[in-house]
Image (cartoon, rainbow, N blue to C red; front, side, top):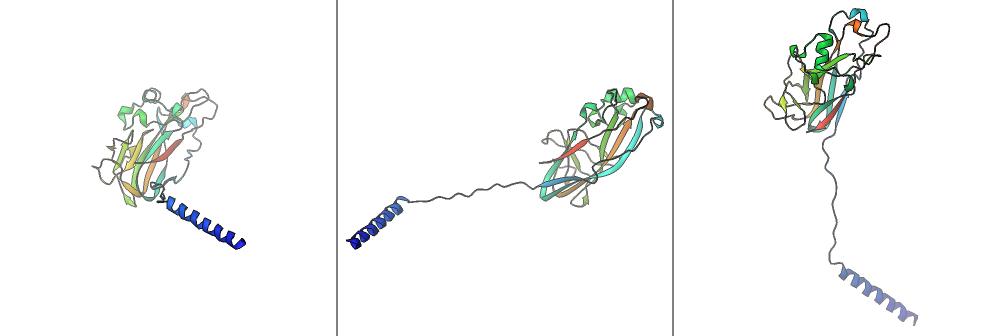
Length: 230
């Protein structure tokens, strides 16, 4: 009896397995993943420029120019990618307007290669007056180790305009994008593994008697460079 019962149980199990196999007439598996763009890192050869102590007594002109050392901005990607750099003025509330530069420094911007959009903030003094004007420009650039003067700029990363780098440098506007192209007649930035930009800075200070007497006035410019993929 025990043997019969065992055989019956085995038969029932085989029948159950047979029915289960017949019920699964197909099987599906999925393949998933995400294709990601090249990853690019942005770095600066130095994170700050110190103009040192500037005695107010030495600021004798209506416009007093101070230049900082060049800074190298590098974009390194793990594969060739078309990129652009956006500049953000972290002291925008203290950025002088073109009218303020003309009035306080006797320097009409139309007489220079700058516009009001090219002026970055330098902070305010104790009287909440704007300290001065900061302008930056690209003096040279390379793409994959080769000199490249084919700079393109854009307000929206859709329409690009040629802004070739020349001996006088190319001003960089705040909240604007810039990138390098393979030729002057390109429609926008090209794909590179490594790009570098030599950035010069120019600080314009007012006449010394326009700052609060008897106190130190900090020069406080702050700009962020962010990479975007085209």
